Amino acid sequence: MHLSNQCFYIYSLIAALSSDLSALSSQRGPFWNQADKHLSGLSDDISADIEPSVTGPLSRHQILDQTAAPLLRAVYEYAETPIPSQSSIFHMGLEIDLKVTRLIFEMKGADDPPPFDQVREGGYVVALWALIRLHLSLLERARELNEPQFEEVSVISLTRLVSIIVQISRLTQRALDDATLHIRHLPLSLCPVLYLSVIAHGRLRSGQSKHDQSVIKGLLVALRDRWKLPEPVPPTKPISTSCLTSRFLRLLAEEKMSKVLVVFGATGQQGGSVVETVLSDPQLSSQYHIRTLTRDPSKPAAQKLAQKGVEVLQGDLDDVATLERLFRGANAVFAVTETVHDEQTKARDYARGKALVDAASAAGVEFYIYSTLPAIAKISNNRFKHGEHFDVKAEVEDYIQSLPIRSAFVSPGSFMQNFLGMMAPIPVGDGTYAVSSVVTPETRLPMLDATADVGKFVAPMLLDPAKYQGRVLHAATKLYSMNEIVKVMTDKSGKVVKYNQLPVDVFKSFMPPLVADRVVDMMLYIQDFGCWGPDTEKILAASVAEAHGKPTTLEEFFDKHGVHLQSGP
Image (cartoon, rainbow, N blue to C red; front, side, top):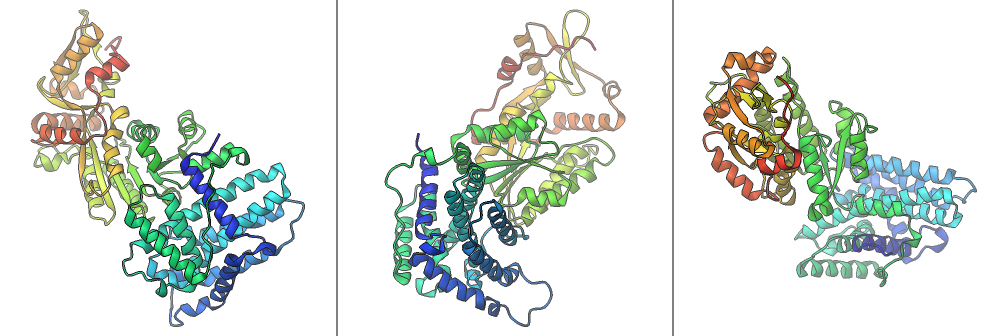
């Protein structure tokens, strides 16, 4: 058994790092010596970069500059500590890692490297260097002790190294994108981390253009010339997995090698569809690692997600600290909020929708996809005023559009699943069945298999965020009239199913007053204006043409699920 190409390149990089940056003081090569020399000097002088006149709260970079130097010195001291026979040395190392990691990644807006021209402040470079050195030391010590209980520590350290490498790779991308970059302008302290990140960048990226390859090669040569360093040489043969645990292979495949996609409602219909679409699509699954939130990770639905490789976090959607943790390091978000019908529906849904995107924006999320709905009151010129559950989604959409975060929207149609439950045919006493509503038989609904197809409309957005910036895709397969819906039910069930249009007051009598007003306004709005307005049919056809796969027809839906015939009124 051999590593996949992706895992092989990561492990090759770690092997190169381990070779060139030996964490043992007794085996320091020229690369480590140069790093120690320049970074030690930088650590001593780092506070000079902070203006004495600064008052009030310090910036993240200033805090980093003030605290990175002692952390690096702590790592140096740790590397010199004799190896004991117990595991305390590993606990010490992981505590240091926690301190440095919190410093770099847990401050507001700190999920990505600072702008390239700010790296000269030094703190970020020192902290990354400290983490690299720390984990190479941990790995070396675990290998020397060679005891089974330290296998877990090795897995943690290797995984952390992968995360650090991805961070410095992002830093390098910014450097390579800077057309004004000249090697002679680089601070000497940046060279070791930039050198490693160029290597990481070259191995982690696939399908590089010749221009990219040329730039990377030129930068490597220039850095080597300035530092007089040998280039790490990757292994020429696949590495056997005998030295790695199966868990580490899984971690390599999932941890930080792809973008993090946060999916809300992952155990529900819309979010679940997005999860299944991403996991089942080779291109999407290679680009995105899914993270979701649940109040109870022990529930079967959450456990099922975890078994599929989804990162399941425990927490409360309305808790600020939970959202900060959920969005930390995330690249994209699919957000859907549950509607609960009561007097607070609009206020609660708007507050929650706003809080989610605000937290995502503050965390540096690059792309935000929101499940929206049409503005019933606006489209109908205030003729229908009780569609709060639709209108509030549109208001949240408007708010998201006002923010600088890149965003896109999916507007789902009528769920086919409703005809398996509350709108399932009811027997009328003569051997036939009826589906009842308040609209005319000719009213056309945009039907959507929510669990199978929402993801098909979200997928193109995830594949090309720039293309869908500010756009809405309308999710459904096609428009079906009420008469067409019952005809499909008749054909698939072998029973006669008819449509029954009820008077408004009779229809309302089956529901609580508040819900009845909202449902009636929603249905009559669709009857008179179309789900997405007068151009609904044209709008839907354009969206279907962009879907990532053919949406499910109503006929296919009932072939799969059957027609649920209720036993009584």
